[in-house]
Length: 97
Image: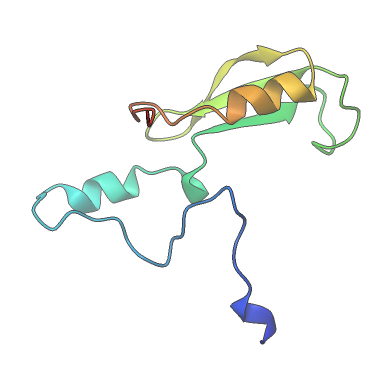
């Protein structure tokens, strides 16, 4: 296998197959409003630096609003920020058994 045939990260949906509804006249518009790499929520250290450094420092939480990332609050540490960021996308339904 070549270096480009490896799978992507397990926490991201594949972007190889476009998720566009052929019956929706606004499908192209909705596709442009998706966040970069389908990341709806992200976190950053409040005082800059690498995200993996100093895991006990507070984090700024940001959420995609359809046009840009906007501040959504703060988290006390890296573990709390990751738990918040791993939540579902806004408007998505939680799968139940």
